[in-house]
Length: 395
Image (cartoon, rainbow, N blue to C red; front, top):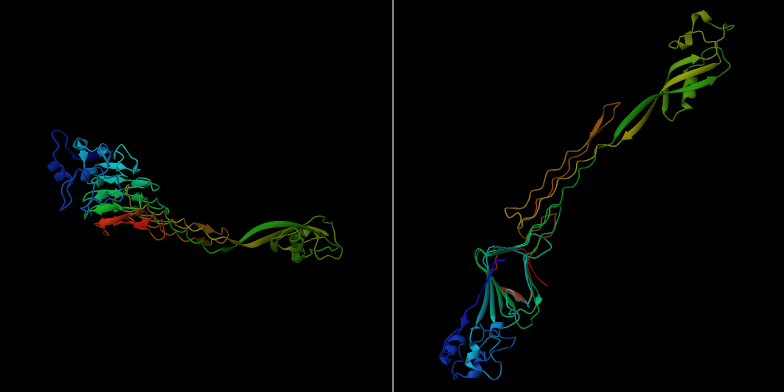
């Protein structure tokens, strides 16, 4: 963590004179210098920048804990006292989080009335959309300024491809009713939320159904009283009894019990049976076997539509150069009827949606992150479309 603490300590050595105390902490115009003016002011609702007549004049800070608040005051108590407590962030830091009781960076001063400033000169970032880059948890933050000068940045993470929500940048929930946290930005300071991820494209529609027929051969038997061939219609009926397909003709017919001579018949046995000239052949038989051609008409579903293309990721810390573009959809699939050769092709899928830029939600796609989520906090300098990207909301 690249956090540097900078405090000017006063009266670190030597004699402590009243004139030096007055020059350091100021005095009340038009009044005589009084020791009571340089007690430690332990009040909460104290705005050092707005009220020049505040008394006592010594701010409440951990470093000033030796300074009396009401009695038994002495100049020696001002040894190593401070007027401000400042920290500067530089380099890159991931997901910084503070509470008002923080000691390691703020020395328990966040809730005290000493003037405090955090300068973000480097980059604070989140690489997870579920987390803020910089977060001040619920607490009392007194006389605190968050400054993002030119070159400083607080970045949220971009939303995942396929409609993921973008990540947020800065969270400050100040529960102190007596003071607002102040946010200031340089002209090129940045508090930027992540953009939302683009939705995937819709799948293409299926192609039209195909009217298709399938064919087969079925058999059938017939027993009658006649001597001659009973006719194709008899064969068709015999075959139809054995199938759900539509029988549309006799392919072959054969007598099963041929007698040597049929009296009165037109043809003789020696002429033989010709299955291709069934009405002009010797057929002295009451029993017949048939093979018939049959077909069935059915609809085949058209080809499936192609899958939609993937959406793009939102712009954010991990992809600062720009949001990801959506991919093209896949081509539709083809279905066909083997008998007729007819085909049906599904439509191609739609392209995926490009992700949102910093602090922007694509349409359709995931929500953008929040630039600043705040309570009892105000942006007092530098707010513009270039410095803050994403929403500012109250929590």
